[in-house]
Amino acid sequence: MEHRYLGGTGLKVSELCLGAMTFGKDTSEVDSYTMMDMFAQAGGNFIDTANVYSRGDSEEIVGRWLKRQRREDFVIATKVRFPMGEGPNDVGLSRVHILASVENSLRRLGTDYIDLYQVHTWDPGTPLEETLSTLDRLVKSGKVRYIGASNFFGWQLQKAVDLSQRHGWEPFRCLQPLYNLLDRGAEWEMLPVCRNEGLGVIPWSPLRGGWLSGKYQRGMAAPPSGTRVEEAEAQNWGERWSVYDNERTWSVLDVLFEVADAEGRTPAQTALNWLKDRPGVTAPIIGARKTEHLEDNLRAVGWALSPENTARLDAVSTMPVAYPDNMTRYPGRER
Image 1: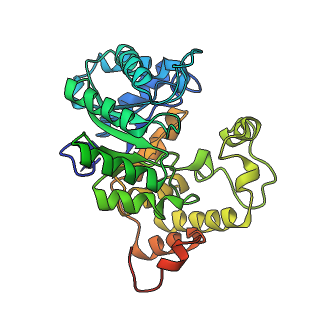
Image 2: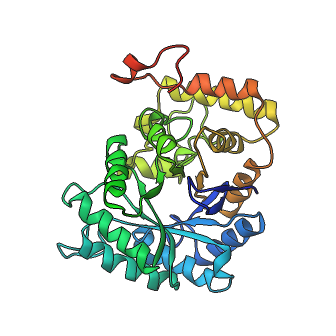
Image 3: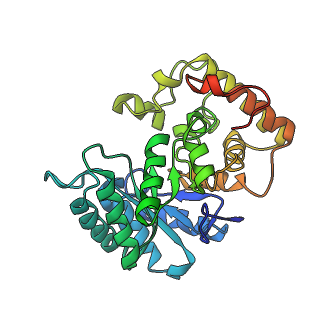
């Protein structure tokens, strides 16, 4: 597996990141260890979790596995924002919540420092200056090496970059957005900000909850039993069947299957390979529930889609551009 610089930093991370959201929930601790071993053996060094994943169990599992490794060989990322308790200050991006949360994450991970500490989403109730100055304090203390954001609008990310520059604070070094063949809205504003400001991009849900894994084909009337998409419908998650059961999805999947067959790869490998080589992308976050899924995903590297097949996937997955982007994008002009 190749390694890439995380945005404009000198930190090198593997071209795939292992997502630990399933650890302690859909994936047992034993299988989680197996997955991290497989990932490391394939050359992966980048693992992403969050304090809310399995209510802290994911961080603890990663931490227990990490104790068996050479700590400096791995880049560990986690997040803060969502509630971990019932109190009024147990949520958000206030100084109080961030400082309490980072100590708890360090304890669960069993480490003295977090390589990448990310805000999980925007907090409209806390001044951005409070959040950014607190994160800067954590970097200066050595408890955090780099900081990043997830699920920000383009204007929010740009505002954070500008404020950090104005005050001399440590800036966000990467963005973790939703980005895949079915969801390309990040290309409108978020990715241009990242490219212009030197931020890395680590997309989450690169297979959109299994939609791009090969399980779904035109003509199906419902998701297979036991799948994440079936659960998403009950939980009202973003990847639910009622959102993606449409002609655009089936057209993308038709071409994905054709391209995968032409390349001699699985649909999941093909979708991941397309994403990892998109402009500005550092490392898609692969989040398998089973070891066989991870084994398949790891085969997405070490090869490249042909230019013709890349163009086919680009064309079929292009999303209608909304205003005001449709006023500034026209043939012959690259943004």
